[in-house]
Image (cartoon, rainbow, N blue to C red; front, side):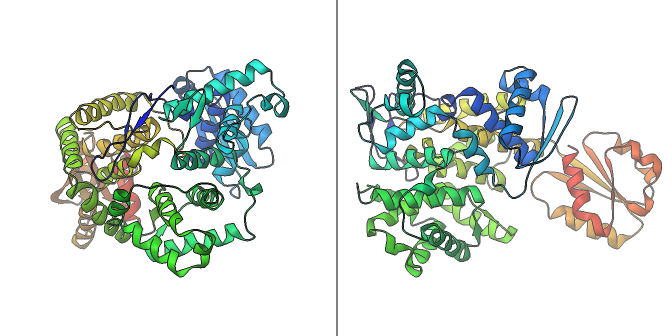
Length: 499
C-alpha cells in the first residue's frame, strides 16, 4: 500500500487530513509540450498576444521552442484562428470569437496519453493498461511508464493505492473524472437521456435567475459534465458527503438558490434524492460572477459573515497578512473575496481534483508566492489538522494579491485642474467613490496646468486636467491625465493604471 487517506474534523469550511501526499498537481504530469501549448492558447485567448522573451523565461524554454509550439497551434486551429502577426518578440494571435476557450483546450488535450490513461483508470475498476498499446499504438514500456505516472498522480492527490491499483472513494472518483473529462472532452458520447444537456442548461439558468449570478462558458461546462457524471454514477455507487458540510453550506447563499431551482424545475427527475448533495457541491466549487456592483456587495457581505466573521482561524490568517504586508486588509473586498475563493473550494481537499486553468508567475509574483507560502505554513502549523491547497489555486491567489498590494502600497495624491467649481465637485465625488486604492484629493482647485507641472513630476502624484485646459506641452507628463464630464471613468482608470 502506497498511501493512506485519514479523515479528521476541522473547522467548518475544511474537514480532511491527508498524509503521504506531495505538492505537485496535474500540470506536473501532463506532457510538457501539450502543457506549453495549453498555456499559450490561454494567453492568446485572453490577452491576444505574448512576449516571446518574457514567456520563454517563465517557461524555461528557448524562443525557438515557443515558436514551434505556436506553429503547431496554428496548424491545429487553422480554421479557428482569425489573425496572427509577429513583430520582433511580440506575437499576436486572435481566435475566432465563436470558439469557446474550453473547446480549444480540449482539442489540444486530446493528444495527451497521460490524461487518456487517467480516464482509463477512472472508468474501469480493474483496467488493463496494456490495451493502450493497441488503441494508442505505443510500446509496452511506454504503457507501463504511463501507468506509473498516473498512479503517482493519484497518490499525490491522496488517493489510496493498494497493490498498484487506486482505491477511490466515490467522491474522489467523480471529481477526478470531472477533471479529466473536462480537459479531454468526448463526454457528448456518453449514454444520456435525450435533451439532457438542454435541461441542464435550463437548470443552471434557473439558479442564475434566482441569484443574479452568472457562470461563464467554462464553468457551465464543468457543471454540465458534473451533472452527467452524477446521473451515470448514481446507478453504480452512492456518494457520501459529510453531513457537517451540508449543515455548513446551508449558511451560504448558494444553498437556497440551488434548492429553489431543484424544486421548481424538472431536472431533479433524472436523479435519486441523495444526488442533490453532489449537485450542490458542484455549484460550491465553481466560480461565478455578477453583472452589477450592488450584487457583488450583497454577496460579499454574506460570504464575509460566513468565512471571516464566523471563522476565527481565517480571521487570524487575515491578521497575519495585515502584519506581514503592513496593509489594512480586513474589510478590503478584493482581498477578502480572493481569500474566500481560495478557501471556499478547499473543503475536504477536493480543490486538488477540480479543473483549474494553468497559471505562471512573473519574477515579482514568484517572490510574493514564497512569502505567501511562508504565511500559510506558519499559520497552518498552529492548527490541529493538516491543510493542503492546490498550488495552482495558490498561484491564482498570488496573482490577485499582487494586484491588490500594487494598488494599496503607494498612497497617491490627486490634483484637479478645472475652471469650474461644479466640475471639481463632480470629479472629487467620483474619485471618493473609488475604494480599491488609497489616495487623497488635493483641496485646492487649480485653474491652469502651469500651476501643477511640478507636482506631475512626482511618481506618487496624479493630475486630472480639464480637457479644455490641457495644453500640448502636457503630453510629456504621463501623470497628467485629461478629463471631462464624459470621460470621468476612463480618466480615473488611467490614473490607477499609471501606477
